[in-house]
Length: 139
Image 1 (cartoon, rainbow, N blue to C red):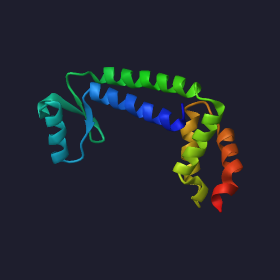
Image 2 (cartoon, one colour):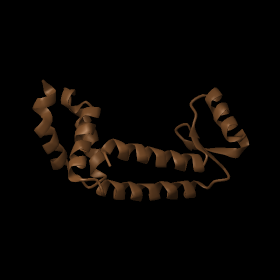
Image 3 (spheres, rainbow, N blue to C red):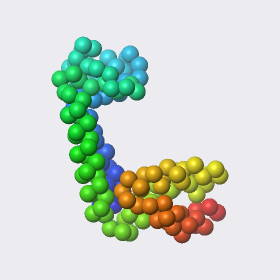
Image 4 (cartoon, rainbow, N blue to C red):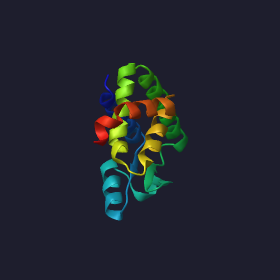
């Protein structure tokens, strides 16, 4: 599995959890009404989970949270099954995605390090990939 396939699979799994629990985000009344209609819900059927997020009352927030925790475990297992080359390519992908090679202030590097700490990949490994590829991308 490539890193892109890994990310796509995670996105699909995450969206399934959101759909299963009738979780959605709406940032205006029109969008809110559209989301309610799409799900066959009314304003009385949902409660806010903050930051523009909503969940159907028929689902318990604890169940949703448990589903997300299970996803986190699956995510870790899937990442651990990636080859070492794929993991290195994953780091390189995120370094480019966060424009670290072109970021004068270096703020994106901290974000990339944080992403991979979640998978047990330390700062030293991220910096090694960065240093090994810096000349290729900075020019």
